Length: 287
Length: 300
Image (tube, rainbow over all chains, first blue to last red; front, top):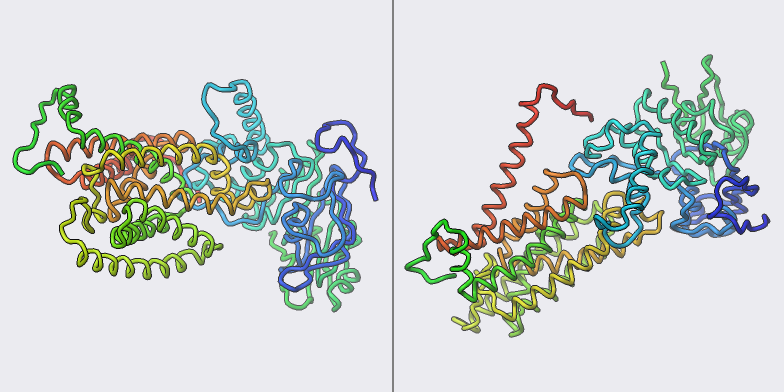
């Protein structure tokens, strides 16, 4: 147990000592099936953690449980000392997604702005509270610049490319200056150049803002060099540790309960081969 | 409808023309109720497009037809019958079709049944009461008759519209968030499901009202075309919302005026006008890059 930090949520900048997320003995059941159990994890400020594993192993479920969107079967999850709950203001979330459809004629800037005031009732009235309106506009502009989306933030978001949309959605998640950034496969639908660029962007955010980053990934290689730790989920179980500790033939074989081999390519990227039902967890795409 | 035979003459002196129109009580009622229901059609229509619920809106207009005819057949106020029936159907649609992929099938299923029911009511109604003094008929419901809206109906429409405007301006921001980005909105604590159901109810009331003006068959003109035009003209969501309402009011006023001076059904004038403005807007915006020396590179 960790002492509840009374300043959590309101304080900024004064060295918080507790973990951002604490998962203790947690289990989730969905539709009568236990997705995973006995999960223990602590996420510390500034950490960059990847959640890896085959399809259906419950990676997104872990993110949703931390967001308070799913009930736990056992154990507990706390975020900044408080039990996980829906609408926690210190978490920025980018869900696994389909793209905005081409006919969505709303500016990227307004989508980012919704991250700041989208939960408020009422309409933003012109000429009322101009000071606050201006400060919101500046916050939105700052975060758009910080993700490098200023050039296209005023175009309809449906007309933008996948990488451009992804940058704006990361900006939307960042606009409240969260202390935890939860990203569900943010690189999955991007081409190689954009994967590298967005991974670099997320890495920079973690470094500059001190926010902890939890990133669900299908392919670990674009982010391997930036990771502090990995959470590897398979067969209802979880292994947590540094990439060197976890992404090994020995650990993964134990996790899958069948022989698995981790191959290291000459450029430092890794490929996992030989486990049943999953041919391409870390497919090696780079030329 | 105004009297056949001699139509008032449009003098191009707009002030006199407006005074001439406003002499008639039916014109005052038509313009007032038309304004009220156009504003809400524009506002609600904007969200119908953002939420990709055009098919649901179209279906509700058929439900509204059945509700109105059913109300008349069992002898209650057609407007009340229409509103109750449409709201019930809308909430059922929203509740039963959780996922987007299932929604079309669910709506189509309900729709087939409801239209059959409407036809049954129409048969009962026509055999029961022929030549009623209420000015009500199946044709009225299908094509609208804003010129025959009574003073008490006008009051109902204005009050309902004021209520919808209040609700829409209260929920506009979370609703936009939930419409564009439901997963993030839910994680941030926006009641996405409740808003979805509530919006279906708003849509039902709006469709029920708009049927008064343009009829069940042309309700799309007032609900979707102003909003679609507004979204072409601006990508700022709140500006688009109010522009949609403004355009809808302009179409309705102009349509009613043209109808008054030509004797054409005003619902047809409103629909055609909305359609023409939409086509011209899209056409001009599509052709604009041809005149620019530096075309916008479209990205995928």
